[in-house]
Length: 166
Length: 105
Image (tube, rainbow over all chains, first blue to last red; front, side, top):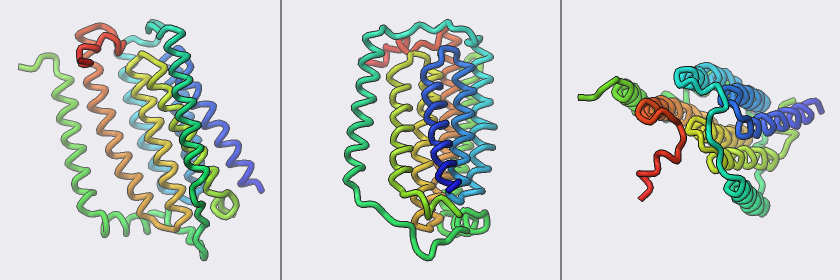
């Protein structure tokens, strides 16, 4: 019973904080609300028996990516409400378009065939042992390729961040 | 008692659909390029949540491994994207995407 309440509570918080990311005027507030959204999503991972993924999510997203965002915002001095806003007409049409997309997605998922949890249900797949077995046996090549991707991203970021490119 | 036996998967489908739509709304609604980046992160997280939900319901750890790869790609994307944004800011003194409309035509 408490799991159901926890699910509703976390879902409500996630949607509220996600909306606040979009609505709030100050970019620093947006980043902080996004961190809170990531924490609620990590809570969902714990509810879904993906404990290791929840920890990695907090470390990578709330710890690394959001700090990067905050650094960039502080470097650009954007912590004031300096940004120009769209015209009310454009905002209205954006909200209508997003609402229509929500309706279409929900409508198309409503008719989908629902799946039931496998029985007997295996609660250990989110633990690090099983994930490591899967990652280093079945997905070894994509793992190595993603390391190359991270190297390329680092080189690209350093290249772009230099003062002048000769 | 875990959530898998109690909560039907449709609730997770609905939740991640709503989160994805909020991300789309952020991309359409704002003009600040940093907020648009954050909305893209929100969309990626909605997809991650759905992948984890399906992998838990089907007792298959491959879905969770995919979430790892999505996280790696998101980190790379953010690093390069924010570097590009810094360069745009250095040249135009603004992060307004309407200044960048030369790429439009």
